[in-house]
Amino acid sequence: MTDAPLFDRHMLEALVCPVTHTTLSYDAQAQELVSRVAGLAFPIRSGIPIMLIDEARQIRADD
Image 1 (tube, helix red, strand yellow):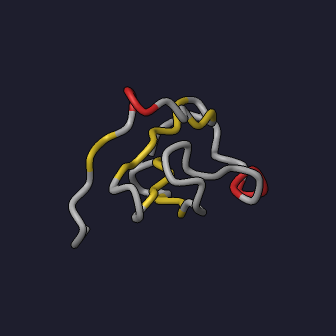
Image 2 (spheres, rainbow, N blue to C red):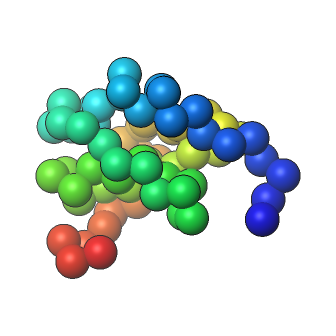
Image 3 (cartoon, helix red, strand yellow):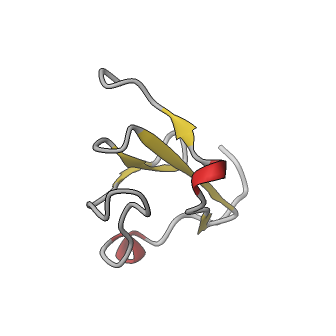
């Protein structure tokens, strides 16, 4: 486990995917916010979600 601050789950209620404007799911193990509709996973670094499309990781539909 890392020493990075944990993501505040209450923030998830206010955040949406910057591409589709749909809700995100939190992947605690990968420390990412996932937009299944867009097929993107946005990283969380030091407890801060990085909601930039250029920083997102492409995910497969079956992940």
